[in-house]
Length: 168
Image (cartoon, rainbow, N blue to C red; front, side):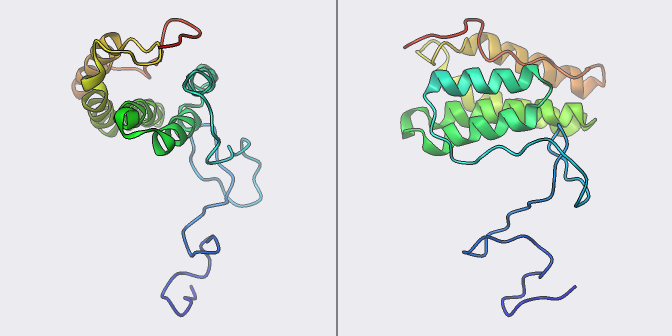
């Protein structure tokens, strides 16, 4: 493998600033596929959505068996959120990645991410959280993480909120 003058591998996809950008196709769980193999359509990064639009799109992707892609939608919200709600979006993204790891068969990684996600959203319990029932998600995440630690879990079903939309 060749390297450029910065030591970066020449076979790696890079943007104009030299940041890694893997343009290989991916499967439904976000795993890279060999070049030339059809994958699922990539999501555009950095899409500005309202909290309601974010939760609806992320849930649509979760319901379609695409938790990695749901994580990307939630990550966009996390990166764009004001400081006061940034940890909520980070935690929701971590929960989606936890489901991704479970679907890939990595129960240890899934349990760790579900625990981290629960820790991130815990400060929002009892407050307005865009219709997200934080208490229910905390219980769900901790129960799933415990089941994974025991090896008794299947791929969990993540429901971000029970209501289709809610303004806080």
